[in-house]
Image (cartoon, rainbow, N blue to C red; front, side):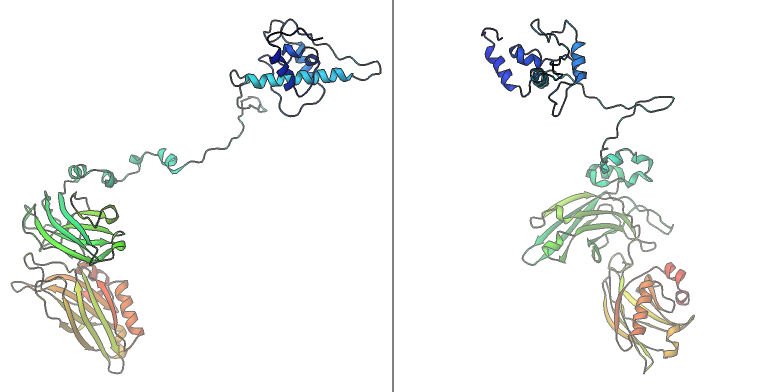
Length: 470
């Protein structure tokens, strides 16, 4: 039944060997390779196939066009199934149909990379109703990342102030042109041998003129700048340069040392705040510079010119006061120790301050006794270590209040107010109330605590005892 050998015989023999099933046409003329070819409207069938050709595939074969280039003239037309005289289908017909089906599928697979026959599209299902619309099957949606989420919003619609933009992305020239607060020159150097960080404040330039905050400013042409240096988050142990009078280009040339381990220094942020001194008004912050020390080479050191940016803290702190309280019930004595103060507000341009502390005992709303420490010249970090004793019976202790006021001594005029706190029945804040409560619970034991000084107006607003003293 086979034709003579020709030049394509080997390729056709390979097609015959690749057949895993049997069909009617492949058994007759396997070398034609025509029964396994398919037209473009045929469908790929996946999975295991039955030994008998399905009826729908037999019907599709009979409806193929005569001019299809896939079939040749030597193809045998598809004939209906014939049963054997005993009513059973012959095994040759069954094997032939299965063989032909396998050849058609293998031909489809060989043609897929170059010319795919099936265009896979999303499935569409009809919706029952008056108006039928295509419905796409549900697919796994892509999870939105934060970048995708915020890309949908316009930040300008939600920003309250254009000055709240992130200044980290701006250069020093852009910051200087936007805020016009001037620039600061400083340097850092870490000493591995002695384990301390040295910060050198060199100079500043192009500082803005002062602003009249409350109308009491007398000189509006020049600033009296100074710089406060600290390592965040510790703002209590800050350093302060001398005040430079009437200049917008101050030269400081001052060095400050911070005793701190190297690994701890790398986790800190250097904060330099330029402040305008005004004796007759409040001290106003001109601008600040913050440098994360993890971003610089501390051992090698370096010098920087940095543009000042606005600070959210418009006023500087008034300073801190360290007190010790001790009550003796048997003697009815309230002992007060004024230990030290630090970073007090400077009241004199030339020589800092001459601070002293006034202690006033108020019983109820009546001033009973006043005492004060000696004043220390030319310092904002005074050490007093002075003790005072007040006679307070135990039954009157709950109604007593102590008013601590820090002044700057002035021989030519009245003393300069620096700050105040109230401890006792009418405490000026939660920290002061906590110190008084600890003292009441631990008789005969001295209780020490640091307190941040407050303004006179703040104390008068929350403590009636502050209104009874001068």
